[in-house]
Amino acid sequence: MPTIASPARAYDGAMPAATPTFYLTTPIYYVNDAPHIGHAYTTVAGDVITRWHRQRQERVWFLTGTDEHGQKVMRTAEAHGVSPQAWADRLVETAWKPVLKTLDVRNDDFIRTTQERHATRVQGFIQDLYDKGEIYAGSYEGPYCVGCEEYKLPGDLMDGTGEFEGHKVCAIHGTPVEMLAEENYFFRMSAYTQRLLDLYEANPTFVQPPSARNEVIAFVKQGLQDLSISRNTFNWGIPIPWDTSHVLYVWFDALLNYATAVGLGSDEPADKDQFARTWPPNVHLVGKDILRFHAVIWPAMLMAAGLPLPGQVFAHGWLLVGGEKMSKSKLTGIAPSSIIDTFGSDAFRFYFLRAIVFGQDGSFSWEDLRARYTSELANGFGNLASRVAAMIGKYFGGTLPDAGPLTPAEEQVAAVAARAVVDAEAAIDRLALNEAIAAIWTLVETTNGYLTEQEPWKVAKDPAEVDAAGASVPGGRL
Image 1 (cartoon, rainbow, N blue to C red):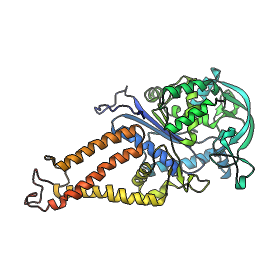
Image 2: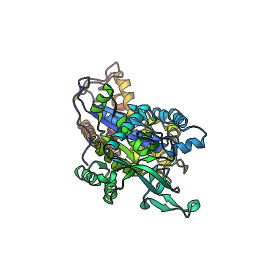
Image 3: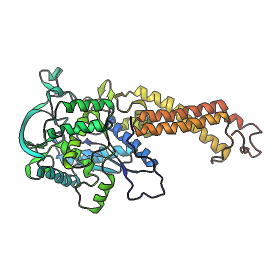
Image 4: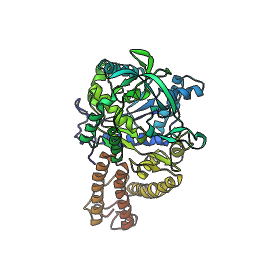
């Protein structure tokens, strides 16, 4: 798979104004509930990728945030007896922002769709599309999933079972859909069917992994319908500027966060500069259940506006517990803190990116977590780090000594180290995060093997290797 990363560049201590930015986004997360490890998985992956680019001394911008409009959030707030804004404020400040610290995530910005900077810029964007004739008034009737915040096609539905027998249910959420009939405004998305297919053909890595690309192409080849982009049956959303009896469809609102957060539509010189320096994004990380929004609707919106398209939409798989997608409603949602309080954030970050192929579904179990923690982190890396640090402290006063001539065994370790760097870098550039860790682990295992074979703690007792003060003899084996 070709890479999506910018090349490494020399660094003189300051970033030139013209230096392009590696811009990565996570989805913005619904505030209808607190985060579980499925949300954390996406965010940690984004943090690891952007840290890698930072250490290569690139300019980086890492965006995450919350999606706070729509029927699902409104109903959750009503169920708790508060306003949607109060509910969103509570969840953001007590759950969504704190979890970033718990995960040791270093994002550059946190956008909320209820912020004025977002709402005003979104209204400017849709007004421009309306003025261009890309939006028109019409009516729509069809099955609607509140969980997905999306009208569904017949192929997206299943027959319900158990308490939902006799109903059509959403294939993702397993809950009944609602039949809605509304006067709406529509985006002329059908006009972009061929342009999207041309995009996928000309840019094979625009949607990844290959399974996601194939799914999107098959969907678009069926022919696209125009998209209903407004609602007039509730008022929790961004008002349509030319008709305030309607609010904007939550996904049309939410997708624009990637652009509004970096200055789209702002008249401020600093915002304009940031947009010019940052746009377009290199990577949108998304879960596979929201792939179509990002790989179909979003590029069509950008095409209509005449804006450059993102470099890649990468859809990772689901985290499964007991064979089911992580879900609070099915009681399979696990809070990140329930793992981190016992194992720590480093172990959390390591485990999910090591144990699961990024781009495929992966199963979580406490047993596998404990086994990998013990064998790979404690007995593998932890033991290696402890032994090396202890020997450096004991025999060299805590300072790394100058290297002497390499023995054949040391040359082998050096070769493995060089190979690990090359392989890990190539893997991260194609977002194969588990492969990057596997490459690094070859060095951990080789170095542990070297220490076991060479037994430097025994060498330290050899009078020929240490002087009277107990320090290593220059050129010795220590």
